[in-house]
Length: 483
Image (cartoon, rainbow, N blue to C red; front, side, top):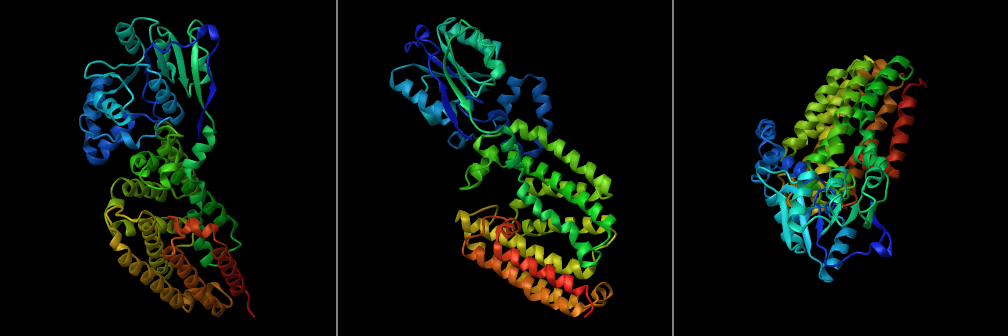
């Protein structure tokens, strides 16, 4: 989502004075994010128990909360998503000799880090331990510093209306129309920068609906049991599919908020809505519980609410800590696949057999290995506790798991369990080479660096995987027929 200049001067009579200082807000204006939320999350990732200190600090005032967090966080101003068009405008104003002032409610360490990085501002006005420089407080401070109507101000939201009331001119950045309409008529709008793009599209993108394909695993127990015509089983499995999809999207939103700083260092993930600033962190924090609640409601309707709770807990535990521990992260990822499988079996009344459990466990471990090896190959550097040299070991583990899963599948198709459900079980032997071919295809794509990050998502777009899937469906259908 890009920003563009929509309007310049309102009228020649209200022309801009270049000797008027230009004061610029930080959060939502100069940068497309909230530095308090980002620094607060960064601190919690390092010291989670400080979460209990946040309310205590907040009771002593928001300025105190900002001060306490900023004093404990090393802020990286270079990684922030800046409003590039506004930044270019400020650089041109600086070149004209205009005085630029960063006036922000953020804590001083954060503001000074930004000012040092940009090297544009002549002065920095910030909140301190006792004063939150926002709204009317910022208006008083700027009027005292420069005099009422003797400065211009660039802001973005409702809190900036108090400042615009005492400024000579206004610069709006992504300001809602309802707020812009309340700018006093005697305060000319010197410049407008608007956001283009759909807020709804950004939300959908952050929810990652393409990842829902993984939740098709809830239907596997019905298929392996040959219960193709049990409508009630399919209905409940469908409810679980929706439940897992909503829960997963809620988890992806939270994960996007938690990993916003790390994502900006990644060649592809930096384009995600939260990392790029296209979607506010506040939106993610508000939507996450709504999606999780909706997922739990569908889980209750299907009779598998416990699995949704377990899945959500495992997902958040993985996002917060487990993904940073080598090898443990592989088993955690494979377990998340297994939860879907067990849930589908539970609600459809077709429990997962030990054969299916053994086969799927090694299959999922292999898929987790694909995901991690693909990430190491794409970044070409250490990632999540792994070193670049660990790729070979992870590939051995993954390929070995693929072969073991094929072996277990071969034993399964000749078992009495299969003979009970299929009229022609011998033809199911064809599933062994087909699934092994599919896994080898994934690993070949990984070694050639075609794999982006997630093997299931990759397979959903891969025409060879679709052909193999069609062949598997035909084999299963033929297995139901006695020749």
